[in-house]
Image 1 (cartoon, helix red, strand yellow):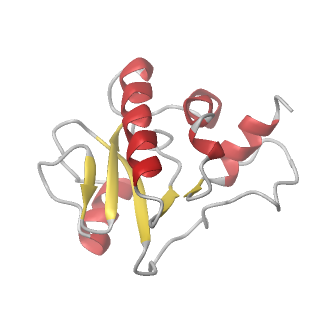
Image 2: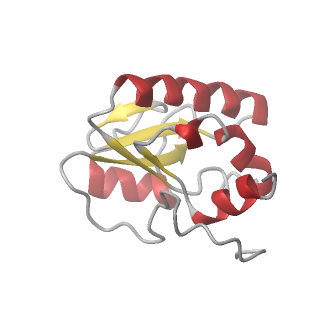
Amino acid sequence: METNNVNTSNLRTTPYHINQLDSNEIFVFGSNAQGAHGGGAAAFAMHQFGAIWGQGEGLQGQSYAIPTMGTLAETKDAVDRFAAFARQHTELCFMVTAIGCGIAGYTPAQIAPLFREVSQLVNVYLPQSFWNELTLAF
């Protein structure tokens, strides 16, 4: 649920529902370190976009897993690795879901700040709930 109504129409916003991707788009989802993609966006990524059971992080098919079931510090490290990957692959467009805000139990206020650096990358789209949190500082 959105907590404020920040106008982010000029920002790169991930659609709320992603059912298909263009050939250069990557579905970015939260996972667990073991890659047990049994529920939420992880299961959807496995069934729709080629996520691999047993692979908890990185590019797999037309998806990219970021482990979110550990501590926020561990998630931040994984987001930093994702940022490096996205910087190296400017030919791809990364559609980040609200990682960590479902089964992992975190809130956008906790997760969005981990994406502050990533938000500057023109090939990365973030959920509206993350943009709301990130733009509160402006």
